[in-house]
Structures are given as C-alpha cells and as structure tokens.
Length: 197
Length: 221
Image 1 (cartoon, rainbow over the protein chains, first blue to last red):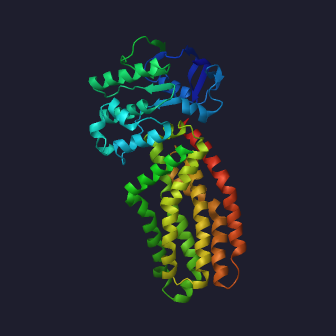
Image 2 (cartoon, rainbow over the protein chains, first blue to last red):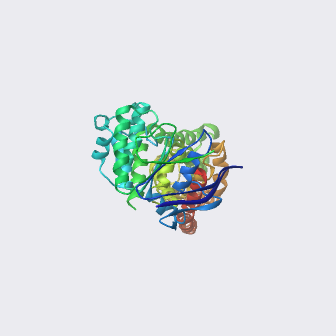
C-alpha cells in the first residue's frame, strides 16, 4: 500500500506540488491527470525517491519509504520520459543489463513486447516506438511492486498497447501498484484518477 | 553486489564498443608527451631530467578527457535514474564508475607510460618508481575525477568546470609521484613518496565515492 501525506515539492524556486495526499491499495492503479507543467512527472519522481519532498511523507505499508533510498529503489520500476537505452548495445544486451539488476527472464521480456525478432539489433537502429517497447519490456523483467510510468504509451502502435495492457493486468493481479501520468487512456480497467492543477 | 559488477561490465562493454573514444585518451597522452622534445630540444640530458614530470602531467591531463562523459551519457539518456533505483547505494554506483574509468583509461595510460618514458630517455633506475607511482596516481585520478564529474553533473559548462575542480586536488599526487621517480633516478629511495601516495589512496577509496554518490543524488533531483 502506497500512501502520500500532504507532500510538497520545490523545483528550483517554484513550489510545484503542494498538499498532495492519496492512498493506493495493493493491486490498485492511479492515473495522474492535469495540464502540461502541472507536476505529474515531479510527483512520479517523488514517489520513486529521486526528488525529496520539502514537507509531508511518502509511506510504503505505513513505513517512511524515503528513509532508505536504495531499499526503496529496489521496490520501484520507473519508466521516465526518456527510454534509458544504451544505443551502443543490442536490444538483448540492454535487457541483460536490466535483468542482472532486477532478475527475471530476458527471453520472456522480449516475448512480452514482441521484441524477439529485434533482439540482436543494435539499439541505435530502432525506431522511436521500438525504443519505447524496449523500455517497457524492462517492466516485464521487473519484480518491483511499484510501477511508476511517465507517458508509457508514447509512440506505441495499437498491438503493442494491447501487449502492454496484458503486462499491467498481470502486475496488478499479483498485488502490484501502478501510478501513471498520461494524457491518453491507458489499457487498464478499474483505475482511480488524481488531478493536478 | 551483483548489480555492482553488472554496472561495471556494462560500462566496460560500452567502452569497447566506442573504442575510438577510449583510445582518444591514450593517443592524446602520446601526442602531448611527444610535443615536449620538439619544444625543448631533443638533447638527452635535458629530456631525461624532466621526463618524469612530462609523463605525469600528460597522464593526468589525458585521464581528464573521458570524465565529461562518465556520467554525462547516463544522465542525458535517463539511465542514471534507473541506476539510482537499482537498489545499490549511490556511492556504490559511483565506485563502479570509478573502477570502470580506471580500467578503460587509467590502465591503458599506465601501459603507454613505459614506452613514452623510454622515448623521453627516462633513466632506467627511475622507471619502476615512475610506473608504481603512476599505478597509485591513476587510481587516485579516477576517484577524484569521478567525484568531480558527479559534482558538476547537470551544471552548465560542467566540462570547463571539471578540470578547475579536480586539478588542484591532484597537485599533491603530482608532487609526490614525480618526486618518487626523481628520487629513484637520483639514487634515493622512492619509498616515502610512494607510501604517502598510498595513504592518499586509502583515504580516497571510501571518501570519493561517498561524495560522488551525494553529487549524483543532487544531480537527478
């Protein structure tokens, strides 16, 4: 269970988030909505422990999540704006590196987003949508309980969005939590919405 | 611990893939060191006296070259966020990066230093002390460099700031390193100089990754 209590975050000199409070139960999903610049990405980075709150708390199962950042990092699978792909490595090598950290089977992850035919291709040859799929396939490896997704479906075709939906429901069925910032509907049922201004 | 080796292995693999970048530091070292005989004249007496200093200064400058990209590439493509969420403490990631920098830059420079010293007519007696000093010195340079690179990460003009931040820190390393080689060449024991450098290394191994880790956390915020 993830709880945020009256959190406030500064970016430089501006107060981007204030009085943010919500709770997500195990298996729950929260969609962050709001105009550009309303702090959706900042909120995701706060939940990941990459950004520190100036006030308030982030609680995981009732404990302060940000007390041990390395521990909290292991609970989190984060998908940012950028795909975090090494262009000099092949698709499979990128995933092998992710698997060395998070565990999981590379072959299954390739299968999950239909990347198996591209496995031996250098990542610099991929199109933008294929890169996004590679970034998403890292989620298939991950055993992290908390998925933080920033515009996860950016540039994906409809078949890949469907495959991504399967990943999301499998994760939630295991009791995992999803928090996603997006402007387009996600392939998820039964989500709560949190609106930022 | 597993993740530590994974980060190290990935960085080394990328260094091999981008072989030209990796080799650039060694080529820079060879090119700058061979400028000195042209500027100062090829007289063997003069060269052999200043050879340790030339090798040391050129090696320090060459090992600065790849520091700009040490965290820069990971910072720009978002990989750094994922590294910090890997479950490893930020200081361990910095430690893996420092080790990768040494293996990809320090070690090749160390291998190139012998031939360069011979080219500059370094006295045989000082050779062992020079290389042993460079072994410690290159490790120190990787640690200081990693710390500096993490601190300037995300700053505008970080590349310019970096040498200004690191070079003053490595002045003691340079003094004792060159002095060790000079002492051995002049028939004295290089031991005290090398021991002092080893003491600096013993302090830098735990402290520099800690500072670098804090720098990384600040950079992603």
